[in-house]
Image 1 (cartoon, rainbow, N blue to C red):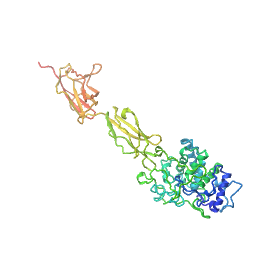
Image 2: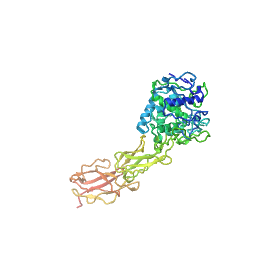
Image 3: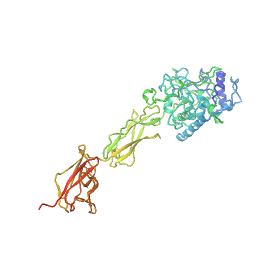
Image 4: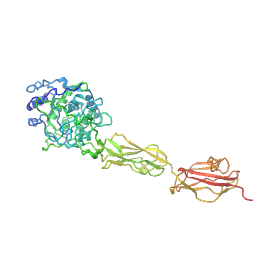
Length: 566
């Protein structure tokens, strides 16, 4: 069912003084916490105090309709368009209500001291967008069509030149409030949340917007069960005394009970703070184009506002004196760690090294905000994970690095151990539960590409005797000493047949038995391999000893077994 627009015009149907009386009556009958504000603060042209230096919405217009009065002293004269409907006033579309309650549950865990009631989100959602235009949202909670405020050009409200290159609001001249909770782009870029765990932060999604609004209201360690903190939170959202009164009235009304209705069947309020002409029924600001909301740019380079907190102007007016009821308090922006939305690779190359050597490449990552701009001063932890003896300097398996001004963090050099194979270098943001980046690192065996004997003396032995000399070999790799390189030594059958011989020279094992193939040999720190003593059986002739190493180096040595000359 489509939302019903313009059901009644409460403020537009009466004079400003009557509207003020209605607020006063509501303050007495429904909302004990409603601020009693002097008349001159409510009777201005817009009915709102001048904009403060900061607010979530840029002090954009909001709906000023109020729930049906329960006071026995009604305002003078009934509003045009008929009386209100208390049952309708209590209606909240199902998906919108679910988003408010999920945001309350989430913040009860992440910010338990805040004591955020979902009814406060409902009250703000009511005045900001009429509960997402009567619940016109899809199954995922995204609004059907954008909800955009007017350009914030300083004409009656804040003046904010474009900060998002039109990414959120489609306006490259001025910012506009966006979505069911009416965030201005620069504020959303700082406070946006992923309330439905779909991997995106969309101001047009009621789950994302409700959680972001709750986080914003809970800023500065506020306890919303305390009246002063509650007032400060609401005024930080829109710095207006009338806004405070309106939200508090709806808060009290929703606390008295609500009725869940199907999505799309809600009623949109009829009057807004920027439209006081009787008989006029404004409609939601249409999207700039018929296409879906544009996605925020990934790179901060083309996004003039970057990750700065919202800085709405006041249209050229003087600074605002905080109104009665606690004053306006600008939420303290999230810490750099809280602003990080993702951890991205920053150009890490292939991680490969030979056992015992340092890796030439180092892991480099970049912390980014929701808009894709860099976030500096964030701690990133690098950890070596897996069955490996590779280590950071000092033998450490983890290291923490703070990101630079460009948002980059580079891991210390990793030195490979003697274990070959693969392991991981994992990068995480300290203090956040963001997806980690894991890089595969490979350690290959030490290699040699050349083998030579350290002596050219002929190796000759009589049958049944012991060779007088041992074979000693020097291994090199690319002209440098190849230390601790694995090698094998085999008495082969022939130059063409590398299988172990069954006769001729042999080595001895630990039990003194003949063996003609030795494995698990290794060059020393100088690249030298000295083979064990060799022995000859009764077979006479010329035999071959073949030595091979990791990396493919091979050396064949000739051994002669012959009886001495007569």
